[in-house]
Length: 160
Image 1 (cartoon, rainbow, N blue to C red):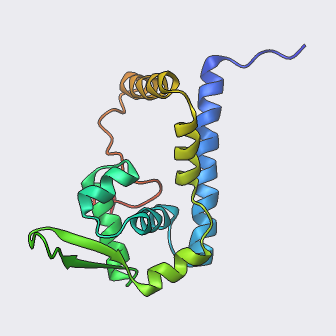
Image 2 (cartoon, rainbow, N blue to C red):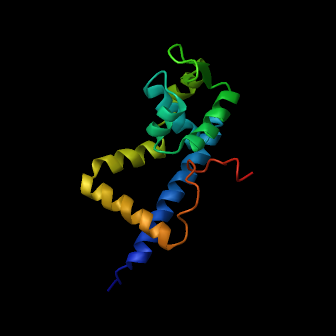
């Protein structure tokens, strides 16, 4: 008779599976394209709509402007994204994929982040809200609610 795993074991295993899947995908992405899955995810979200600002992109990637800003800066340095003043509002920077960025995306598979978001979107609204609430409660109870939510496996300026 198999003993049923505890809720704590199920929760920890689920978290381990997500982290493991992201780690494997990031290694494969770095080998194939020289980019993290976070960078590929940002490129893909940028390709979905042209003329996005950093705040538009932060909303599309479901993260903070400061987190996405670091990834964009790296992509600009690598020549995959260009940044130009908006023709409508000169104070606003518009981000675009370069030809090099588009060519990488043409061969890149769906990212793990896209799979997770698609799976999350397939859940009913009540389940999505409960899951988000419960994750936040778990992190708070674990004393981790003050950890900066950077994009997965993307080094932040603070980490270096």
